[in-house]
Image (cartoon, rainbow, N blue to C red; front, side):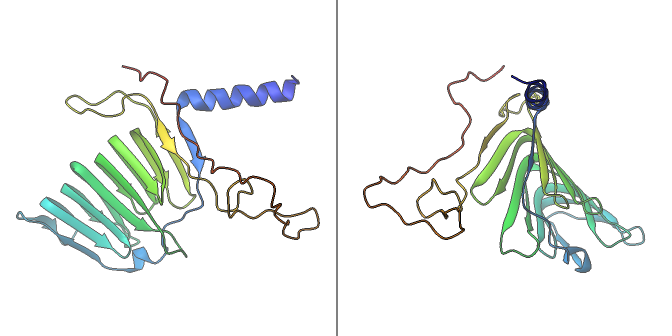
Length: 219
């Protein structure tokens, strides 16, 4: 093993020990902050129209463009650039936002969520779940930056009175559509032309990356 390979391996192991950081090809819809902020709640609201801040309780729903937050309670504000920032509490809180330039959404669920529209970041605390299509990541803390498409997951102990995933990170990445090992995936020759499928060659089974469920969960 060369020094360069050994150094790279140590870096990967260090990243795994701290949590999981993954790049995802997704960005928030850029037009959201140009839209009005709409909110509704079952209970009387505490809203300061001059400062553009408020607290809502009871089946709360806040929307701005493609962004939707649902929770039992939400403390929110309108930022100087018209974007929305909010801290939401619920069982669970749900967050949904459309990707820029695509008819797809990413979704987040947790007991508490902190969204900063100016920084385009979402933090999920306790029983956190972040989904993009059929791909997902679960832990007790997940942060996501929709401007860069990077999310980070950390294993943390369960909050008092909350049964969650504990200090483990779990996730599923489905097979890529362009994976040549997956039926229907694109396979090309060296010249760039699609390769002819051999009638005698058996088709490869779909590959799915999943965490090793045989490993005991930490207490």
